[in-house]
Length: 134
Image 1 (cartoon, one colour):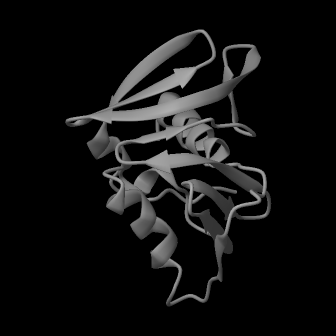
Image 2 (spheres, helix red, strand yellow):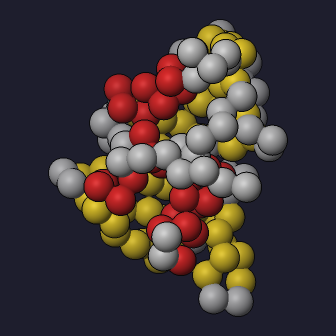
């Protein structure tokens, strides 16, 4: 896996970090059979399931679109059709520094990642499969 793809995966995982909302929440503790539900949320919002690494333990989806995925740590953001915004808790290493991911947008077959001061585009096909992260 090339470094950019790995960094992007780490970035996206971190993007999904969100604080608990006061709105009504759907909370799901996943079993092996139900784990696909977390990835289905991405697909229902026109985002590739490979944005989310393997190993989701549970998730919360609020009525306002705020979503929280729990692995060994928690990541989240606000999901809507073709976009995850208000991302926090996700950082990627770019050269010699760590930068936070702000947003992921889909336009056709391209994903645009906003990482602090710059954007980077990737083909959605690069995220067809959820990666295994350690």
